[in-house]
Image 1 (cartoon, rainbow, N blue to C red):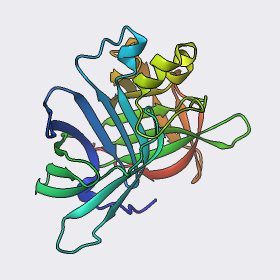
Image 2 (cartoon, rainbow, N blue to C red):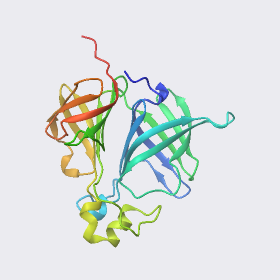
Image 3 (spheres, rainbow, N blue to C red):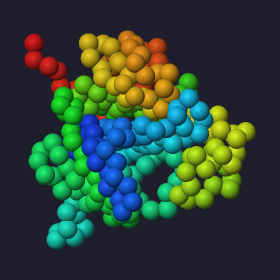
Length: 254
């Protein structure tokens, strides 16, 4: 079901091991990019962020959406564009796109197109095979922007905030800027949950989340197809009914 429009070499969960800019060399920020056949989720937690505070939580980054792979110039590497549908941070003024060069099947280098940066991504073992993308259904059966993504043994849940950005938001501002300028709206602006972890033997164990209190939690979780268009999530922490955006399930050999 759901053939992949994204080349298989991009599938999986990718850990960023290096970010190099003209002013910064970062090897310590916790970053995971989960890529299914079309959909992506991304979570970035800087080690210096004091997530006991609203200001510290605002330093995190995370987003989800669809991915586009193109090669407009055959003399240049492929272009990967992350088309963000939901974003913890305020809107950008430029696309999120980079030139991609695979150094090996499990290592890809990204060079910024609209910004000066270089990143190294390494694919996590066990992150290919099964790929699932789901959109939560509300009480009326209407799809929402909430997403559940599975790649191999990994699961990422993305629930966006329900409030709109303040009217004075301008492109390329940061969430930290907004929280500082609108302290009375800080709680609503930070109400955006991304949780990442493993799904094995019917248990979802959360490794990292925008809400630190969720980290280390283990909860029952099973995903089942109700029909070609609907899936059920059997978990206390997730909506029960989901629209199937993508479902490619690979069962481990017995």
